[in-house]
Image 1 (cartoon, rainbow, N blue to C red):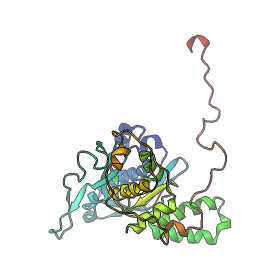
Image 2: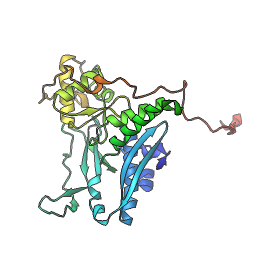
Image 3: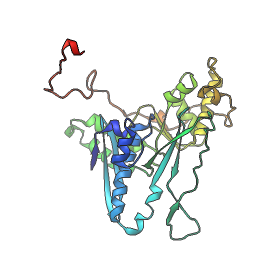
Image 4: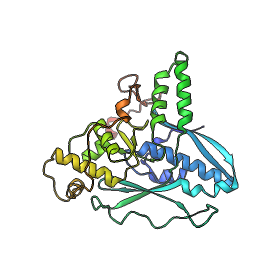
Length: 316
């Protein structure tokens, strides 16, 4: 079990400090807390492989104002050679916040040993294909699954059978429920509010957006990190095509042509999105995924007993 409380560093507030402590550059985005988890996992893995060991995450949680990961450690000199396949660099557009991941290593299909080789040149162009802005690069981060969903589901069923024992049962149940539903092979996520803020359009409901992704043939889920998170295996081009179709149904006001939203909407969608309700997913939810804060203005406060420094009037 490993905890980290320096969230300002891990979430991108001090990128240079994060690199000196964890060996990775964070990227400022809506997914910064999940990226913090993946930076911590990558840091543990990078230290483990120096001793011919590797990690297998059991559960990785962001809660309150810290992160905590539970990992199993195994020893295998041959498995350590495939560790580059678990790391990825993140390319995020500075205009529309679209992101793309690229693995550090690759497998040569002609080599039966499955030894990881350095990956090829980044698949992203010099400019974003959606809004023509530049990319910033972050990472490397852990891009393999960071939860054992079967373990989370089994623990969830156990605590439901003995719910009266746990004082924080509502919080534990909500977190484990969200984790058990997360897509394992979809690192990071997009935010529905962020997509609509870029285009200056009205928000579709979460059910409608989930349905549009499923109707397009992709998977989608939420995240325990953010109630508005959208974890999906759909590429960013499909997500923006869905938003273009939504704007056609709900037109926006005129915007200057040099803004990212205007450049995105100037392109015709290659995919005709369907917002009709799809079966399963968020529609079938019954148990809560998030619990409200225990009180108003709840959060980190000044340390108790810390004296208040009062300056003389002449030095103000």
